[in-house]
Image (spheres, rainbow, N blue to C red):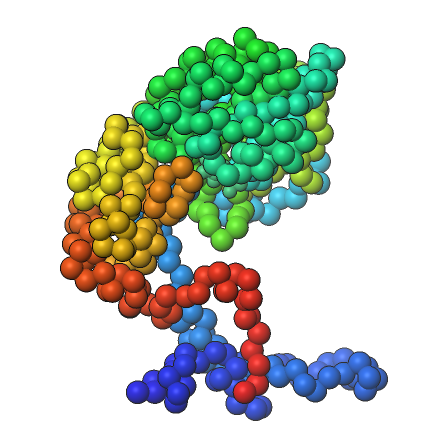
Length: 493
Ligand SMILES: *Cc1c(COP(=O)(O)O)cnc(C)c1O
């Protein structure tokens, strides 16, 4: 039946479908300046229809389509390698305060001492949390943090007259941005295999290092959700060969307050403030990919850094400083300041004890899911995980012809956002589940029951899964075509 938001032929109404000539959503005030002639006819077009709708029609249209979005504020969002956790609203409130939101990056430093103090403290907190000597808040995404770290590694080798170090070694369990960033920084990328236990193959690393090694780049915990049991050995091999040890700590919530990569011999670690340190993300930004470095890389940090110095009047003040051998700027100003305020607020509200609780809860939640779904879904690496658990739907595919994609689509019917699928690439039919630390046992139990129900449905009624989702405004889409030939334009029928 046609409802007010559906056309007679059953299509959801777009804004143009609601248009009635002459209708308007606002009342313009009387013209109080001289009327100006329109441009010449040649510059005008009358074939460009614009929607003419009342205010209430406009509000309903946008309110309706806003509900098609899935967000962490609606329901459970266990997207592995992305840390979609609940971010306390108080951190948004802090970032929205006029003293934070209405300052300008070109203001003289003496007028924004509070903002600089916040950045200075955050540099210190992040360095401390990762066991490093210093930090830059400049990068605006995790991938930009990676690029920053690799440019520093290159500058470091060149500063020592060591120009032959062109190779970056990256385990095949790494996040996809790692090899991309290394290539962008001008390095040759070589992949290292993962052993049968899910650790990086130390023998393969040993065989690949030489005096051309620039850096070794490892995601920790790995995208298999595992802490690499060979980590100390790997670090030792790389350092002996004169390479820089890079840690991708985009999702550090399993390590916070427990393990400091700096203590294990890392030279660079980046962390995504929009994953680990509160900042709603998705939809492309804004983010922040702070980079923390060991003592030997301090001189190469990007500019500007915030430093504390004694002013001429003897008082402490915060200034913008340029490290002596800086790689330069990674963006126009000081990074995404709003994201930095949220991270600062998050760390301060949690405190030391709260931060350590984050990692405890993240790891317990993931292992709870792992233990409960084991036996229902294939577990390629059957060992304790960190903040996420990687399953495989290969048993369902081989027995019932149901894929990881079908499982993910069916989850939508149950009101759950699909986990990450088909990644990491080294796991067939991968389902990568990160519950995060902010979910309750009740939510996890509900999710576990749902996943078991879907495994049963796969055996009893595979078609139900092949056709899922059933309850959404759009059902199964041709995703490849939607990406290759997006149809974003309204055309008059
Ligand atoms: C998300 C992520 C990145 C990339 O971060 P962006 O902010 O999306 O550029 C890098 N590594 C890992 C492990 C990640 O999860």
